[in-house]
Image (cartoon, rainbow, N blue to C red):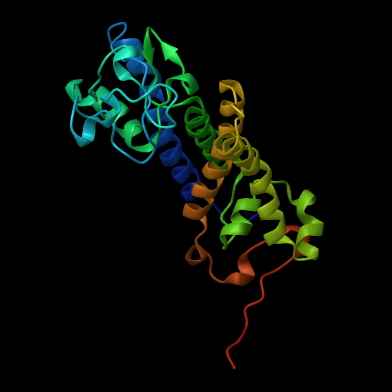
Length: 252
């Protein structure tokens, strides 16, 4: 019998593998694409998040290829940064790699890394987020258990003895929120300070703060996919730290 009162962790392991494979596989392509493409194929980019800017050389899907004034908050003079770029002209694998990033990331060149003369598809912070999700998923796959609810499943990565007081005083929600906040808030502070002031972060700090956010995301993803009450015979079967038990309220 496992610490969660069940006899196996098959679902937890499978969910961790699925999430790690999805995010890790794409992250692998992010680094492989600039290496595999000819040198200087991908110029310095500067687009918008949640918008398609570099699908074509012109038109609404080629917004990033315009010659915007230098110093603009969005975009730059693309002709002065290596010329135009259209990811739709790449082979399908690299087109997917840069196209998915185009939609989800601003791709500002000074916040991104370059390999083989080619800018990576995602900025340094997003690289950290993807790597963090893989780490978080792997940690849960190694340590986590289905404990009926999302928050209890999330907390299951910690040894029971660390959580005895938390469960005895029913501080599970606060503990979960605090742990997630420790991982997420640094990225929020760094990102919003950069957005709202003249402060400019650096790629190492972006990577580190993105990593923390990604770890939280990975843990939450896998915990939410692993928390399944129907895998228990009843709430009484769930083993919680400190001898705590779920109480099922009876309908009046």
